[in-house]
Image (cartoon, rainbow, N blue to C red):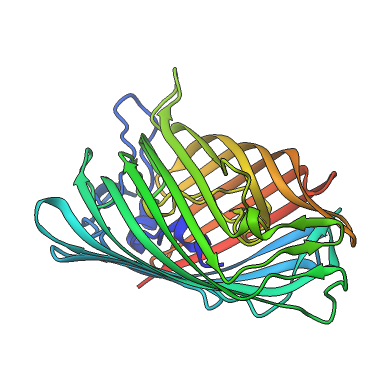
Length: 419
């Protein structure tokens, strides 16, 4: 569940800030921005907080998500993750560690903006994973599977306005090597045929642009960001696989091509103050030759809305499990209104609409990709707390896509502590 912590990126502020009272709303008000010093008056006394180094962050996040009714066999999902980011004149490093899912990105800086790049990632969940129908797990689809991957590449990085540590244009090309494994469980249906463990060799072209300025809680305040990925991989060895009457042929799935992208913008609300923001985003992806299967499909999952530059690629859907959807193609759009209640306290209201071609288990003997549309509404708070910590609380209501036609709710609670 490591990618969840990437979205909050140690949204912490010094405890002294919580002693301060926000100034009254007037034409001269300016929202405090990430990393900048803050000075204000509290009960007649002056409070000053120094600048914060946003390029050197260590934080621990713990929390949980509650589901009503259950999603599959899950009523409550605990979350724990360690986040570490450091940048010097010689290198950049970013680590998200959460035991079953971990990722690390590194870059050695060379001359003229060139970088030598590395990426390590693993998803090694030891528990069976099952498809979900009407909010219930389908035991016949049970399998234990996962992967470990390493990338090596070359990139170019150009700092862009507003020239904070996370504002840049990145062009990156990687060679990717991945080991994919899967195992049957006692519940796996007799008609289910799993492909063999395999090596994937491939290439990935990645483009990232981030021109956003964040506020003191590391939430996007103004500007826009965008990115795109082109992925190709070849599996060897490989074979046919099947789920009842649905068949994945070796010829169709041994190699695959995926194209995906996103865009996000933080905008003022016409006629309102700087405390009011609109956050809009759109995510999309497809496979030109429909070559995707249960393992190679795009992943859409839950968690807080992505705000950190290195996490903006993650496609969110409120109230979902981690990587709940495997999809062959998708478009997900969001529109959020955010209100600054106090300089350390933000309320958001968000609507999400998704069009996805998802893997769908009708029954124990039929599996296929099918087009679906889903809508969700969410309301939440982001707040600074004492002890250099932050609270993220969000309630979401989905209107059918998570539970295949039945509405349901989720409650996400995350606490992040910076060291």
